[in-house]
Every structure is written in C-alpha cells, then in structure tokens.
Image (cartoon, rainbow, N blue to C red; front, side):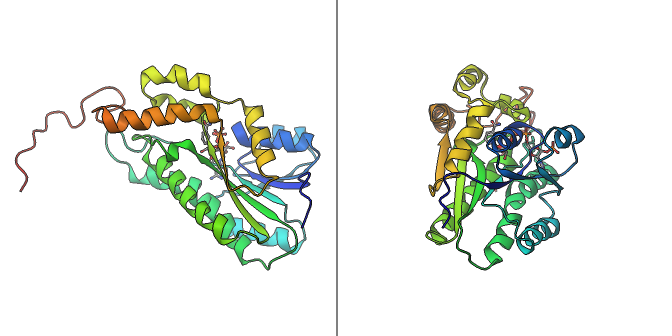
Length: 272
Ligand SMILES: NC(=O)c1ccc[n+]([C@@H]2O[C@H](COP(=O)([O-])OP(=O)(O)OC[C@H]3O[C@@H](n4cnc5c(N)ncnc54)[C@H](OP(=O)(O)O)[C@@H]3O)[C@@H](O)[C@H]2O)c1
C-alpha cells in the first residue's frame, strides 16, 4: 500500500470553474501529477497550468469515460485519487415538470460519476490504494423542490457510494463522498431558491473555495467514507428540512418561483 502521506497523482472532473478549479490549483501547488477532465477546452487554463494533462471528455459519455480510464490503466498512468466533481444544477420543476432538464442533470451528476466507477471496478486488483471521491451535497438531506434532478442525483450518488464504501472496504478501491454545504460558485446562485429569510444565514455558513479544496484533499488522504463540510452549514439544512415538514408551504414548491399560486384556477372536485 502507498503511504498516502502525499497524493502524487489525481484526476479531477470539472476544473473550468468553482470547486474543481480550486482543487486543480491546490494540487498543482502541492506538485501532484494532475489530470483534468473537462467537456471543453479552456486555453487560459491550459496555458496557466502547463504541467497539467488536460483531457476533453464529457462525463455523460460512458464510452469516452471508459476509454479514458482504460487508456490511463494501459499506460500505467492511473492516478491515486479520482475526484468526481463535475456537476450542474438546473430548475426542472417550476411551472411544470421538465423531464429533459431533469434527465440532463441526472446524466451529468449521477451517470457522470458512475461512468468512472464501472471501468475502475473492472480493473484487476493492485497493491496501491485508489481513492474514488464523489462530490455529493447536503441537498441530499434537504431537497430543493424546484431542482428535483439535482436532489435526486445527489441522493442516488450517496446511496451508491454508501454501498461501495462497505463492499470494497479493505481492498485497493476506497470509495468516499463529500456532503458539501454552500460554497460561493456559479452554481451557488441556484441556491437563491432558498427561502428568502434564510439566504443571509446560508451565506454566513458557506465555506471558501480554498478551504473547501484543502478539506477535500485532506479527506482524500484518509480511508474515511464521508466528509460533511462545512459542519457549520448543517443547522441551515436541518432548519429547511424541519420547516418543510412542519410549516405548510415552507419551501415546498407550492408557489411557482415568481410567487404565483400553483395551478391557479383549478378547483379539485371530489376524488373518483
Ligand atoms: N457550490 C455549492 O454550493 C455546492 C454545494 C454542494 C455540492 N456542490 C457540488 O460541487 C461540484 C462542483 O460544483 P461548483 O459549485 O464548483 O459548480 P461550477 O462552478 O458550476 O462547476 C461545475 C463544473 O462541472 C463542469 N461540468 C458540467 N457538466 C459537465 C460535463 N458534462 N462534463 C464535464 N464537465 C462538466 C463544468 O464545466 P463547464 O464550464 O463546461 O460548464 C464546471 O467545470 C458539483 O458536483 C456540485 O453539485 C456544490
């Protein structure tokens, strides 16, 4: 087994912005060998970090992801850590439920991770530890009714990683997940769907990009199954969940996002 005192190699998905980019910067500073997987090329990023190997792969494409993993394995370049971070957040359940949007979110956030897992579990066992880290979300505990695909994808990811963490315990594959609270990124604006009175509290409880990258990288040096980060955000999500269960209309999506009553004008008759 590797000592894992330092991660010498890491693959990160979704490094063009936000947490993925902060992770890329963190690992480059630590002089790790970094493989960055993005769905598009960003020349500014590539020229700034010449030591990084940039792969242009859409994580939704199982074929391309499998090929990437198999090619890395065949050339002896498989990294010690996979941080499967790429994700999207979309409104799919406001005026009406939008199946194509929901599907796009699931394809990215769930299958975009599972596509890496299949080829990794097919590889022969080795004598070095390989960490597979999913970036999940505290949204697993308190869902956003307007972004149903997001909540579903993170819940499903959590369910899969809980099983794999136990199933592969003690082997060369270490399955880990990060239950992430609010971090100010492009995606963060989506969380403005939060009940208005709680946005300020949520902002106070959010973590910086740099601190998040450090916490995730430290976690990937361990065999722990789950990191909940930042801990101070937990009460916010618990309060949302409690409000949703106890207070009629509290962040339950009973009104549309622009405040209109849902399905105004309908008057249900007796059930048949
Ligand atoms: N920020 C938060 O408050 C928060 C909280 C909990 C969990 N998270 C999780 O943290 C992760 C990173 O999110 P972020 O906040 O850093 O958001 P972000 O700034 O929007 O970054 C998302 C990254 O994912 C990439 N991506 C999206 N679809 C992709 C695809 N099909 N193939 C490859 N890359 C793709 C994006 O690339 P493009 O530039 O090409 O779009 C971008 O690099 C996500 O999994 C998110 O769910 C975030």
